Length: 348
Image (cartoon, rainbow, N blue to C red; front, side, top):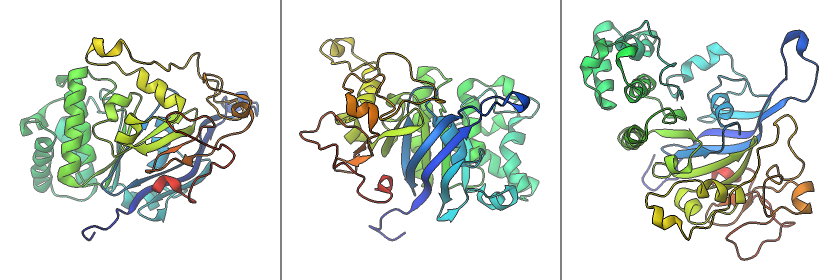
């Protein structure tokens, strides 16, 4: 890519939907499906980190797995490096697996307890046809890259801490030099001090290797310092997408403001005059999302328009998009005129 050139789209999700039928086999009664992901359009560019944030059950993990084609989309399009991979089979996807990787949430369940670290990290290398000698050298390089001594190659998973296991998962994902790594809540199962170490490591790896990330988290504070853009998801839909610092300085959707209000401050004294826009109640069932804005049942600003008309993702400037009839931190907004500025505004 030439100097000054705009980064190219790497992962493109276009009106992506993933619906799951309720029940199994004979118990499947034809009722309404679970709308885990319901019309999401999002782009991750080369070398970019997009943080995907929302409460548990909002569809983040389903979206991340559909993005790497571990789950079959119900509708919409998944493109990687310009190629439509929405319905590709295992053989068609095989050449892409070296470029598109995922690190799972549970560092304890993602490693085979019967395999040493060298076997876990070296599996992608062996599948690619690399010789044992070359693979051994590469494994040592990968362990050093994630902050572990190469001697860890001989250890068993039960001999590792949660943070060390997650580093092993990162090393395995990096084995074949991917262009994009999807990180499904990679620090949620770790202690706070270890979380900071892993987040810093992700930033270092991105800088050194030119990686792109789709970083899934439920806490806005986790993604703040490593994300170029942040997408906020609720009940299968995107509520807000913005450059990271712009979103933290000027949240537009009430749901985003509620998530930010839930982030603990390091200095308790700073919280005394803090306005808290807390969302009340529980999210509705994803089998029966409410009409209009899906957040209207918990939003303190909801009106009749919110309960009947679904707001589009409108552009509020500086690449800041939000789906809200009554946005925060904007001087004036005509809900009837709000509309995305392009066919795929989230690639801005």
